[in-house]
Image (cartoon, rainbow, N blue to C red; front, side, top):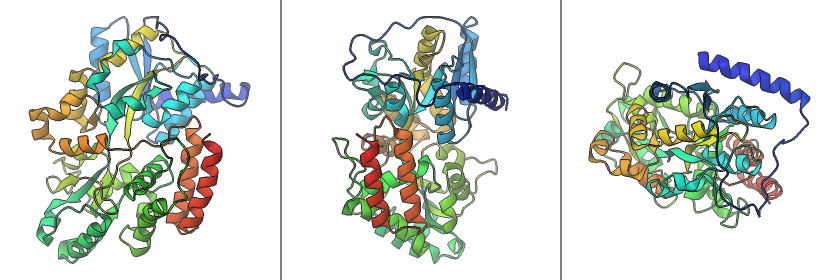
Length: 433
């Protein structure tokens, strides 16, 4: 609560400063020809660590360990709102007024290009991190124009959570395709104990989670939001087929109507309450849904599988978070060491044990003790290695807003999918150049 209060005070200060600041970005976009070694990071002393809500309290535990070992370089956590969109907004506001109140910032993987291009974060010395030990897709999310601007700390891949007890009773196997999933639901819903359950849900509220779910549906149907050259490609039969799977899911009732309001936490609570047979979710849910303190009705009753696709296993959108250093922060040398501390095998193992979030160090996915405790790790590793990134765009905030508006209009029936995608294609062509 103290962290949230501090965040609100900082946000208020930033907002006040913005009134006096000129409109638009105060950062100078990085020039394509920028070259040379990473600048030396100097200054030691206290820093802030700015992050979304620490639901597991493990970040605070690790920070306490750091503080105990570094009495002259204390780290204070600043917790931002739970919503990724609100986190980004406060980080952008802080950068636009060149405030030094943010030190190490916990960036969603899709924000790297925007923050690097606007010089809101500093380039990091690549030679001080053994990047060969990290998952390659995760490292790519921390780079911009072949330079390192962040370090991957948490990765993420979408998983299909399912009620293994009900699948076994109905005599069905985990589905690999959308038709198999809906067919499995028909059999399971015929069971007395499943009569009031919903078939499937993901994250469909109008926020970043909808961008992720749309991205996965399109890729899993053989399409893409942008091609390898970065050009928008959503006005295609493949993209329409992917979006139509979700649209038809809502129309048929396979996706409950209330799922249009689901973000990660709303969906998690519904699954843990026994309201869903299948759910698209990140790995963090594993630990929470397996709690035996009465908060979950499905502990020990579920498992995970790859996301379903049109004709075979689907494709996850690449998620995760990277730690970067604000360009306006003091004590950047301390900030760099703090990032190194958070990416040690010991720290990443601690986070996995406490949260079931995806680590970025490859070795942890092959550790026999960890795979015994977290049997989903091989499936998760495969999901991440095959995952597709969301569009890398300097104007990512505008890009994701356009995607959300078009997808939401189609899911709610405000527009047919063909019209929504045609309009989205035009918007993205203007935004991604």
